[in-house]
Image (cartoon, rainbow over all chains, first blue to last red; front, side):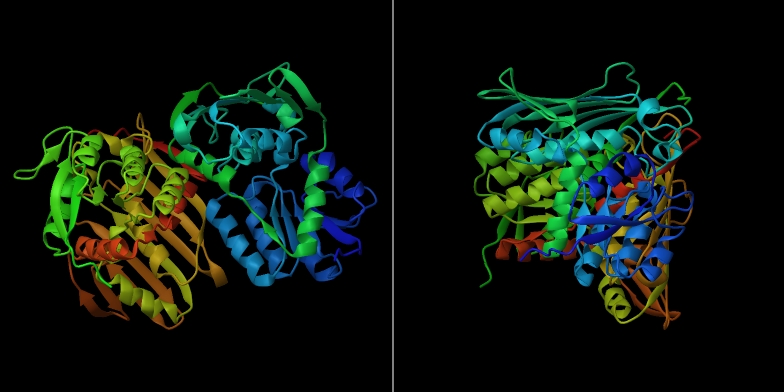
Length: 311
Length: 311
């Protein structure tokens, strides 16, 4: 049976992604009501704000769900408090700063019988389900990922992305890996990783990865944060019976040169539809595969120092 | 029912660890017979050698098990060939160069119904089982790991340890983490990591880690490869009812200041006893926790460049 009560939800961390995506997606979904925010700085106009998550958890026991949108380095602490307080938790991507902490959250959520949703927004891009279905019946030969964007445009003033745990160019790159791991019928593993790190920074500004999979499948991925002008978020796949491409981050699907579908800005609507289902069923949806590939890329990475990055 | 047939086994990669530990441990275990080696250079006196693993697999179908002792960067390729050929596989530590490739081996071993054993030799140190049992009944407050050794003494001429995938000081440090994850009743996760990387090298020569666990538990670990003179492999643990220490890599156990046990060089004998059990039961024993902590330490690591290392 579906729960017809509207689910009150609070957003924790009201930075760019919360304002651009989470607020409108929650407001556009009848299953949810945006009841409060948590931010140590300003909240949002017309919405109750708490300076601390502990305040919210204490004062608003009627809010059963939280969406955690702060930088990944602070996500574990907040998630474990919320789970301990019996709340359902949505995690922005990446779900944490380490693999082990996300595994730990899964155990805690299980013990408290609450939902935990590690979101990968790019998996909700319009072309992804059809790409997955088409690939399921084919022998995949080669995948080429090109994920190039302008860090100044997408991450203005976000110092945390260059700090340990901020992941650098893997912050967007993990979106490509989340699509890859969703649409391939069988897993791949990293065999080579080159990380370009600006002099004086901790995180890479570019990365070049090579994966292998079953039956000779190879995947090449190029991530770069130095692209000005048009932005590129493309995945091209060659199979035994034709080729497929996902472009615009998965919003456009082309098969055998023919455009199958184009639909922008559906990702976060899909995320909140899924979160409502998970809460209704008290289920956990945490796939660590994209984060594991990123950790592997750091562990196996050959580091090259490149020119300093000045914002 | 136990299988009383002696299990023929081949060692692949006959470097230092194979000669120091695997050969005598196999010879000292009645369940096994060392039937061959694989090495592109020289084999061992009096033992049949094959230059390539594929030769061994083709020419000796009567050898059902292999122990893979080559550097981790080459382990996946060999393991997947051996599994594909229906052989039981023992992996030296670390089990691979990436987390994803080891997960993949587990799936392949399952599909072929062969045993796969990701060994963590330090878990077989004499004091570990008793430490685990003693800690299971206590509230653990603090763990301090000091793992300091002389890289020139233990890894002479091993260029691979400084290359991507060689893990640097985590090659010994992962032994400490394998004990930690074995003896703690609940998991911990990394919250801080500092990596000291020699100028011009890819892998850290020292690392300082901080973990957190349940109920305020903290773990501090210091790994250093620059220690000359006496070598230090110590784990000290404070609990609500007394303290415990494991020293000499787990060979010595002291509880409340009283020496409980000292026994050196039992690790690999324990590994081969376990491998015989796993083969008999067609079981898989792969715990990724130590490798996950290392990958997390690279992903979350703050890197500091230190003076060049010259062998």
